[in-house]
Length: 170
Image 1 (cartoon, rainbow, N blue to C red):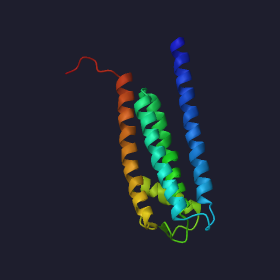
Image 2: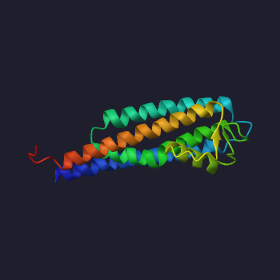
Image 3: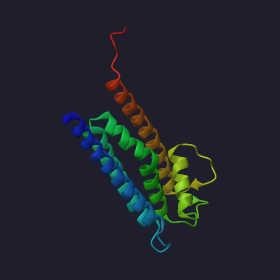
Image 4: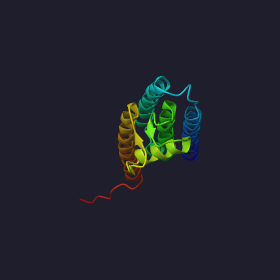
């Protein structure tokens, strides 16, 4: 019985942490992608880029090093893969502003979000193109997509092997 309570508490904390990440990334996307032309630009975009880099490093450290449960890692990485990271990168693109300052052809927040998902998944349709510093941010997003996918697959395999041990085969 105590194992079930511990498991329930573990997933409650995991889901609470995931919900907080979703909230923060959604709020960051909303506020940074709705800056007016006077506020948006290189200075604000650079600050947002540095903030994103710090956030990503802290999250990787927290959820890969400190979270030892593969099931918890799987939940956190799945939510990050689906929502959190693309929203945060879209927020950075929005912080640079529109008028082709960051992504050529992006005119509104939904364009930045679309570009972010296309870049994160490395689909790259080519209808929107990054320019200037945003080219580097787009490369970082594509690499982050690869790394997060690799970590997600590793967590899935680790979770599976813990629940399905080998039975004395070769």
